[in-house]
Each structure stands twice: as C-alpha cells, then as structure tokens.
Amino acid sequence: MLKKYLLTLLIVTAASATLYSQYQTYIENPWTRDGQIRAHVIQVTPRVTGQIIKMQVEDNAQVKRGALLFEIDPSLYQTSLNKAIANEKQAATLLDKANNEAHRAVNLEKLTPGAQSELTLNNLQNAIDTAKANLLMAKAQVEEARLNLQYTKVTAPADGYITNLNYRVGSQVIANNPVVALIDESSFWIEGFFKETDLNDVDVNNKAEVTLMMHKNHVLQGKIQSIGFGIAKADGSTGNALLPNVNPSFQWIRLAQRIPVKIKLDHLPEDIQLRVGMTASVKLHKH
Image 1 (spheres, rainbow, N blue to C red):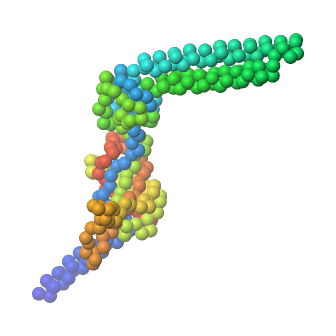
Image 2: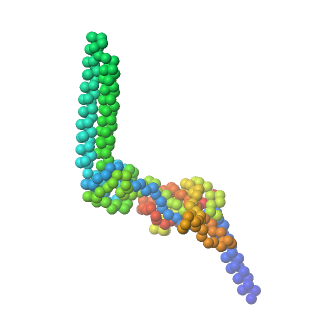
Image 3: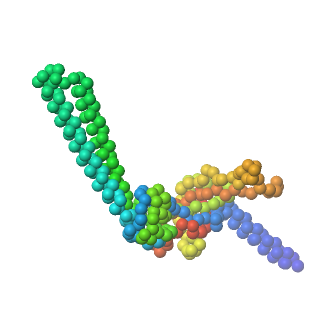
C-alpha cells in the first residue's frame, strides 16, 4: 500500500513539476495562435476617366514596378492636348504682336517726342503683360493635357501581386476611384495578438518564432518590429438614440485585452509564399 502512495505521490510531483516548467516557459516565451499575415495594400487608382481599351494584367498576377496594368482610351486626351498646343501657339503670336506694337510706339516716341501719349504707352505695356500671362496659362494647359494623356496608361507603383481584379476591356473607370488592389511584396509582416499580461518585459527587437498554419513544419525566425500603442474600445460607442453602448460584464471577471505585436521575418524560404490573411502562431522570446 505504501508503494502505491509513493508511486502516486511521485506521479503527482512529476506532473506538477512539468506543469510548473511549462508555465515558466510560457511566462518567459509568450505564445499565441492568434496571428495573421499582413502587408501593405496599394489601391491602384486611375487619375483620368475613360474606357479601358487594353488590359495587360490578369487577376492574382505578379507584376513589377512600372509595368503597364491597363490603358484608358486616350483619344479625348490627345484632342485636348492638340487644342492646348494650338492655344499656346496663339498666345505666343499675340505676345509677339503686343511686343511689336509697343516697340513701334516707343521708337515713334523717340523720333517724335509727344507723338504717343503716356496712356497709350502704358496700355501697350499692359497688353504685353497680359499676353505674357496668357502664354503662361496656355503652357500650363499644355502641361496638364500632356499629363492627362500620360495618365491613360496605368502602371504598377511597386513590385507586388494584383488581387481582386474585376475589370475588363470595355469597362469604364472613373478618376480617383480605386480599380484594383496591389499587395506590396516587400512589405509582408506577421501580426500577433497577445494578452496584455503577456507583454511585460517584451521589447522591440526581441526574437520571435512564427509557424504558419499552412506550413506547420517550418519555424520561421523574426524580430519584434513594434508593439501597438492602442486598440479600439468596445464600450462607450454611440448606439441607438445617441446613448452609449455598454456590454454587460461580470465584475469579478476582468478579461485581458489583446495587443497587436508586429513581427518582421529574418528570412523567408523560397518554397513558402506569404499571403495576406493567413493564420500563424507566434512565440516571443523576452531575453
């Protein structure tokens, strides 16, 4: 009987020691399954309105910075540029005319003092200044029209992946309205959400281990890049009749809030492709 008690005590002691060891490990190395892959998402937005006449990319395709994504019908913008160039030439001609008239009046005044009144000379100078201003305006219109013509070709602003492309040749796009998302391939990071009680003594540049749900056999190494300074509050938001929304809670239970921790990977194996929204487990090393 004594042997049974000793055996039971030994098992309980071993189990307690194992649990205590696991607890200490968790305290020193906080861990969470609540992690996700994040990246900067660029909203590709045309600067001019028109119909797509050429589509150079497909959905979920990888593109390089500066690559042509699609082209908008340039005919109207080419016509606007031609008009602006014609207006510029006309403004330049009117400036030449104003200069010639003023030059003739000044020479006449030199040959025959009093032949031209001071008011006439001032008006001729004002005509030159006005013609110069009109020429500057015409040049600006030419530059604007040339830019709009260039904007009919929409290019990739960064290396990345095209996602959620629903437009085709013939689709109408509107200026300053996003058309497609581009995920910047150089901006991937892992965001783990840890209980606030787990973040004592956690600092930027502490090491971290990341395991993706899609690649459970790979443990990726990284470092803490930043720790969130705030989260949105649930209680106190405005509800019906402009009254605050307060969720009922038990006073004897205080739930720890989740704080986002941003992890940057040291190296990514070539056979692993990160995708925004993928699930990950994250372990932090405090020391």
